Image (cartoon, rainbow, N blue to C red):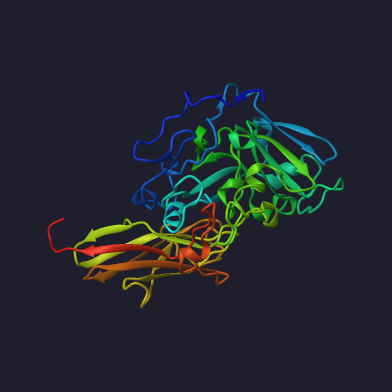
Length: 393
């Protein structure tokens, strides 16, 4: 693509914050520590998890950079950044979460395949850009279209990012046209993150944001948009990011039996404590995040400080000074909530957190029940152990 190149090696990587926990160096995959993650409702780009499949692309000439829209449409179109910036700009607060978040914990049950992640492969940002529904109108696709007159039912996003899983070809993914052409779905072609231009790690100069859906569909470094009849046939849609039962192994897997994962399930994590923490007996603050996919809000976060025998309801918040109510007009429907509760803990114990979303979906109690060979969607009850010590810490 004019103006944008994908390096063949890792010699020109962007600078990163030194406190990040690096899970893989090439390609670079990293997450912040737990306390840094929940320090603010909006996650600074430095502390937003980095998920990559190859070397970070470089823009050589932003004026020459463009996205080509083609496929089952009346006429193809080249869009330059100046064209996208002419469209109405929207700011959407949305949480992105890697499907592999909490994979490391799942792998302790049985080995899984994939990059190890603790609990911070998630972040919440204010994304600025044009709605995809407005962009599609430029190639003759009206809002709320489900099928184009040429049979297009899916919108494929192709990255400049080259990856080994595609045999050196580009990373790609798709979403249904009915979602892409719906302004209420808030799918963006984003050029800003938290009021600043995207940085290279997060997709500069242009990326897709698909709120409420696993991060793998929010394609970075956008090169092309294709209107297609069937869903994308790329590796990460067809041979990855699918949810299988615990009985499926690498010997008997049949990828065609499962649909690509889209919405992420209800999730909740304690971030104020590590997996094992030593505390002074007394009042202990327990805080973290909860999120659900598909625009569903968080109805409740339950916390137990006695291993699940009894439960207390934590307080929830998003924006400062505004009372959070799930699915309320004043709440950010695509964003996480932060929760907090203070409890008296006098003895060593297990603390558990679990969330309920606005559709009354609950988290599974045991990770064993949702174990899958790729280690995705670990949304089991989050558990941390605390050891009470009277000595000076």
